[in-house]
Image (cartoon, rainbow, N blue to C red):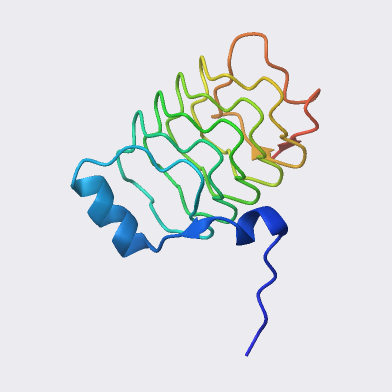
Length: 143
């Protein structure tokens, strides 16, 4: 059996699987702050305006998800697949997006202040906030 290493912050969080998350979301819950959703598959869901502040989403499958106006402040999205995701007006302040897939992602008007984006992949179809420079953030252009 392979051991799974949890960092100290992740180990302190309440874990939630996909079934529980979907059930709670369907019942109207929108505040998931501080929850551990590591590796969860939520692709193509409409999660607009959800509160994912300080959520652990490392390695999550968020491909083509609608996170418009969502609060992802301080969240860990390392290595997450956000390809084709809609993040217009999302709060990503201080979020960790290192190594994430942002190809085709719409980040227009998103708050990327203090977000860590080194080694995140983007392409010519990725839309950034006005004045944002992916080269300065040490992002990786995929041709």
